[in-house]
Image (cartoon, rainbow, N blue to C red):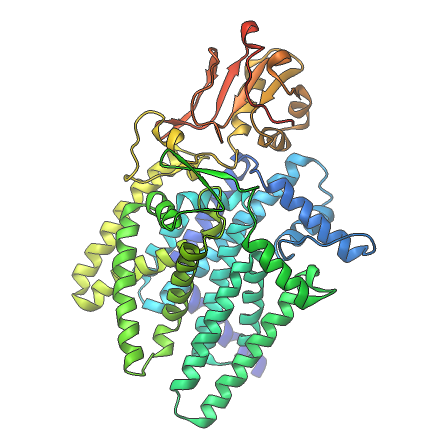
Length: 538
């Protein structure tokens, strides 16, 4: 009887929770269905094959040891599960391997996006605000496309969300097991990218502030104990999830920080506003500049408004020695992470390339403060005015949705209204398809266009060869890459490093997004075979 009563009580709570968040759950279900319908549409990014190899490096090191070495850049929280899935499911065909990877990373993104909805609901207690932020995250053009083929930067965003969600519960309930869980998620963010350390430091700063402001000695000891549990948990699980640290933790950790803070593709050149910039010598405005032209303008305006309002309110509370940690804890950590990252990048000019994908996690803070700005209108003015802002934001999101539909599967080519959309302007002045996922569509066109059993293809970048892995085995076998135009039937390029047009006449495929060509295919004419065009060895 007692067991039945407890089960009924738990079941009622579960049903009540489902009812409360039914719309959010429906959005999650719809987004999963859409993901299942489109995950096979995306190409392979430049780094995908490398990340898979790094995953196998760690797998071999863990299972075999000896002469095997762990990968020096990342922990195993994302790549090792992907390797284990590949082995457990006995997937041997390359196409199925990368389909599995795309689906895994995308589902991780969708689950964490639902977590972002819960975070906003906990913060505002308004479903309309939480659902709005949830939808805007799903309708982030760059993030959505990357959520299929970027197993570095997208999982980092997911682990940030899981950490923030756990932080909210840790602040509210103070249970020791929640602080252990908080440490686990924080260690996952660190393992995904070393920038996750900033999250670790910000959370420590939050609870130290709480200790300093709390007047009760017993409560201070209790908070300090939980903080210690969080620190130990983070350090322990970072060590466990990063095989590089197993032999000499401190030395390896320091070396890894130095490696990641100075890592770049041989001082790669980045095209921004028509000028090439060395990734080792970025101007202070580089990161804000990229964010300013690739985030929808409406969201940018709300973000600036929100971060100013909530930043001022936090400063006022700090002056009064009343931070109100339960209400402002998430705000404190978010402001710390955002501004420290932005200022550190401006001052120290850490190498960034391929647009600003290394800093995509900052988009979380943009969306957080954008939605909180609308929530502020409810509190400052009236429910009616707040609803007007919410309705306007929903209508605005339809324009983003429209772009994402017509540009599918190249949503990552989004630029906002600040950038001139004249013919080829974006391609000629900015990094466009920098990860070369469009090579898939170029190769598919070549296979459909050519009647030959074996087609000789010259490609401007190695990303073309990577994208053969997303084709069927028969399609892969039809393509033979050549290293010059001498024997090529076709030439294909995504224009990276060569934004201007090639001196070839027979262009047979040139799809566009925002009036700019992202992939070009040419039939090579006999008289063009001696042209000196850069071709990477495949």
